[in-house]
Image (cartoon, rainbow, N blue to C red):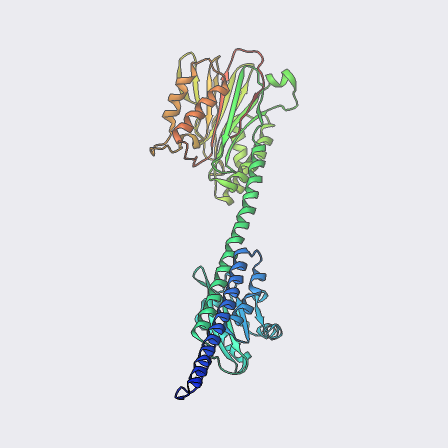
Length: 471
């Protein structure tokens, strides 16, 4: 605002005239100060309302609607036009705002003819922005026009124009600073909206992962079955909500019930899909369905793995992932355990009579690696007091506070220290996980899924129901 003040003549010798002149000057100064103060108050109120909207908005379009109004009032000009850009640099036509509204709406219609704005990366070229500025200038004709950029995350997110309808711009430095301030606050608003959208996206993904984790947990056995002559306990601790570890207990003849089921042949399996998170969990789910169908054939473990490899090869090849799997079946009447291995960590066998730990292993390739992979079947007769520890590499590869791995040697030592004690399968499992937790430390977490199954041979003819714990 430019004010012009002409003071009264001060050369009069009349004292009364001098006094009148003095009061006239004071009145002019007071008027000027009051005018400036009124404008400052108005500007402060406008900026305060913009900051409030910036702090509280949840709808970007509603926030952008007020930008042209506040910009025009802060600059004392007739109108304002806001042209936002998509993240990929295209003109965001649906969010264009302007006042006067009728003139802005007519401009949006004219902008349809500006084809360049629909190109990805348009806003990232200064040449393109200059072309758009000239397009806007042609629309407003001889009106005074000024433009500034709106930035967010270091990229162009829009252009803000102010114009005067009756000639060239005549505005002060304060007006120019206010104009830039509105553009900067608009950039902050767009930035806030980006964070808000990302937060909402993460919430949706988290909900989906949580649901996936719940579904996957339901696919793992809810409890360990009652099988004549042995007791079982198992636990899986995924590094993420959805993991790639898998274990299962399956009767080879599910139609049997009661004692016949307890004395029937059972399959025990543990596996690990390479990778973590949702992709590994989905593949594990697919593999589970295939394996359960194969178990019903009653084939020996090596044939089961051979057929499973044939079935899963195409799906695993497309995902560029492989599966390690240890498959075994147990006959309670003979206490014979047959097993085959597809490159999984060999389970540890504690023989109570010899008081030694050995590995249950058999040669075999990863599931999904080769079309004609062959597997061998081995077997062992279990005696009362024998213990088998099935586990995944998330246990032995767990990183401790000192930077060392938990490793197989430590796991063997712990099994040896607990095997001779008169403990059940669940107590042994709890002991091993407690030692693993202590090794990792309270402020650290697993880098990979960790699963363990403990099988202990007993002399009991019947056993109580043993629940599986899922962490």
